[in-house]
Image (cartoon, rainbow, N blue to C red; front, top):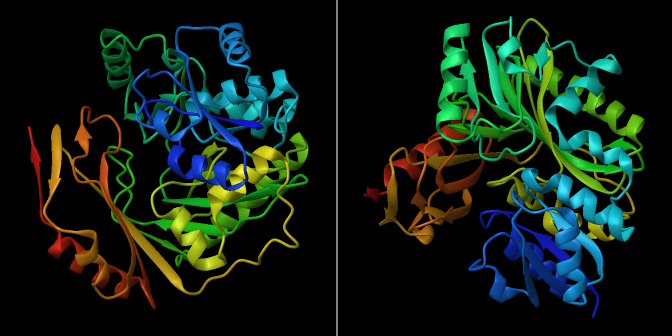
Amino acid sequence: MKSVLVLSWISIGNVPAAVAEVRRRGLRPVLVSERPDDPHAASCEDHVVFDWDAEEFPVLADRLRARDVEPVAVVCMVEKLTEWSLALTAHYGLPGGDGGRRVLASKTLVREHMRALGLSEIRFTGDPRSVDFFPAIVKPARASSASYLVKRVDDREELLSHLKQLADAGLGGVELIAEEYLPGTEFSVDGPVLDGRFHPLLAVEKPDHDDVRHHDAGLEFHPPQQDHVREGVRVLSEAVGALCADRGLDQLWLHFEGRSSPDGRTELIEINLRSGGGQIPRSLRELYGIDVIAVIVSMALGTYAPDEVAAVRERPMIGWMDVEARELGTVRVATTEDELLALPGIFSVALADGYRITRLEHENFFLTFAMTGDSVAELREHAARVLDTLEYTVVP
């Protein structure tokens, strides 16, 4: 049976959904992760343990060869593992192994290429100590998820203090990028890239975004309602499309985030080779009937060929919230998913009773829910009912 590698780090990467899709196609899922006790290993045909941080690629290739694993595809939905995915696909001559994608593995490379193409004017540097513009955002250039280690610094003293904290925590070796902080409204866009063309399908306005901790917060919704956000989505989608055409990209899904200000400035924040998380996959299914995990597995195999890509749908209006706990411990939720699904307008709920919070430097979402409505006001009413109904505690 032909094998498909499913890459995971700290047990993230949409492994259960990816494995189910691989099995549905009659293929053999092989998990590659750094945890010998990975909870997803039992769902796979084989499990290759590999330390992403301490071991080199030849070691991984040798371990796969020793297990007689000759993959036909690599499924990766973890930013930290993008370069590993590219190395594997190139090594085995698989779809996605072309050099065009390598620019997307690094936020610094994306910035440099966007600037070279005349698609961005944002100030940035790969050497945070050289920053001469404030406020600035400092974040990992390659290894990033759930807003981990993303920090705004307003002056040089705060910058140096942050860099010292990272060094003291043993993170001084993390490759960083510092970039200009952009005021305005944050948004995200999801869609496929086919034959060098990006097709935006889901555009999400984030009016309640936490600009202090740089975490998603409050209500998010499709389609955007503010004029400057709608224009920002158009401008940035065209810019990303130009980048895709320049790099000759094909058979991949993109989720990117941007900011747009009322005075007309729009810039990319970051770009990911996966779908957005939380309720974004469920919302894509609600709007277009798309199973985005199935699409991503098809793309990994190089076989995604829809008769046509759907035109953007703006109805029904969809909104969602991700609810975050803000103290260390284990989340215990008394409310059930069925209780929340019974509330007006709610069509999707994911509750993580028992979610463990071990650090506060990244987003700790234990509940996410999606809803439909006729306006932003109605979506906020639906969300308020959910939050009023929700009962939970965090046990140290």
